[in-house]
Length: 305
Figure 1 (cartoon, helix red, strand yellow):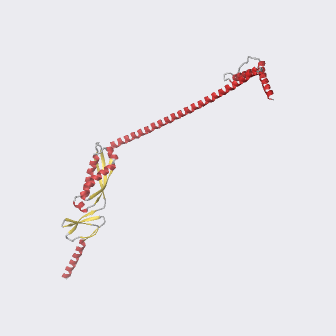
Figure 2: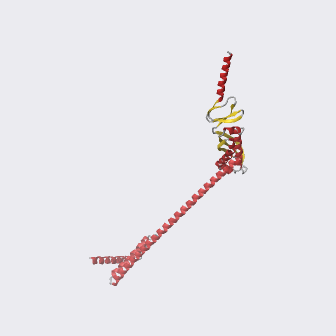
Figure 3: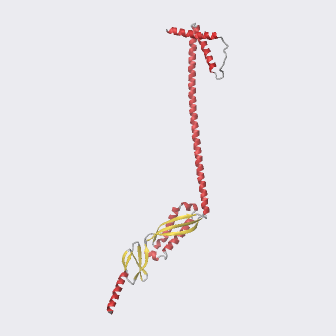
């Protein structure tokens, strides 16, 4: 009976020993193996064997990329502006042994290192640079923090500044400045529009003046040509009358005088300031002149027959 109990206890101890020597590491994690308190090796994901009662699991390290929030802190810029800044850090452990034994509290160390460098980087910049060069700030922080955490077996993949809050009075000043800048741009655009409109108007007036001058020149040319033709016709008529007189035709003289007489009457009749006029002349003279015109016409038509 006592032997059976001993065998059972021994068998149970063997089973417990075997199970204590088999370790299954989940994916995304690495465990450190310690022998008598000293680091021995790193257990990879999967099934691993250790020596029971001699070896033990030291640290269970998360090898996946992790996110660490950076709390808000106040930073004084180079131009003495006080801003409130927070951010976020993405990091991944590449060496489980270094992350476990080279630094006491890895997350706290990364957090303090990031906050310190945020104050250093942002404190060397003016407020305008701080607000407009966020990508540059992120790049500088990443370079500094990643280099500092390399001995810990950590790779900092990204550092992002989430929010930069200037004081309320600075926000109000920037709003007024932005409003003034927009009003300035609007005034410039209005002035540019007025200038362009004035240029177009002047160009139109210039074109109209050119066209008007061209029209006046053409009209003067046509008027001069009309006067020239009228003078030529008058000269031809005078020459014909002179030839008729020289030939002894008295009726031609009557025709010439009657023509001038009728032209004078026409001018009187079309005058805008004279609608009523008295003719201090005898009606027989008019009839005589008209008779001369008729005789000339009859003589001309008689010759044609």
